[in-house]
Amino acid sequence: MNNNLHVDTAILDRAATLHLKGGFSFSGLASFEFAYKQVLNNLNVDHIDLNFAEVTYIDSSALGMLLVLRQHVQLRKASLHLFNPNDLVARILDRASFNRLFTIH
Image 1 (cartoon, rainbow, N blue to C red):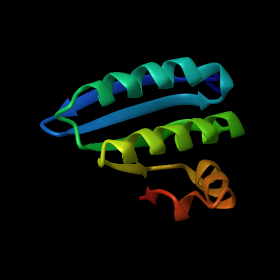
Image 2 (cartoon, rainbow, N blue to C red):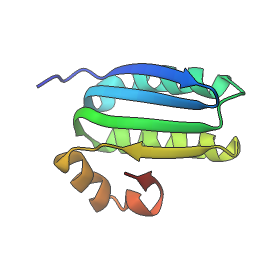
Image 3 (tube, one colour):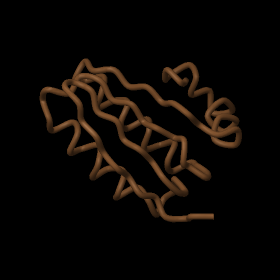
Image 4 (cartoon, one colour):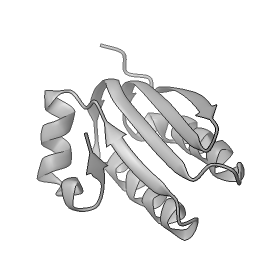
């Protein structure tokens, strides 16, 4: 299991995708914050996708960081979607009622 979070960012036109890989926990918050701030600094971006396809697990500190990102995105009047969570990550997001706060595919 990869315990370190790695974030790859791709921007195409007005949409950005952050591909998250590894364990999304407290130790990966700096990487995640750096990546999303770069995206938010691009004033052309009005849609952000977080790709969870390669996330092995997620903890409460990562859930908190998702809420912080959501606030930043709302201030920008942009949209944010989470997609491709595996079964474990999807269950955690569901138990945290994130399906009420985020669009999750």
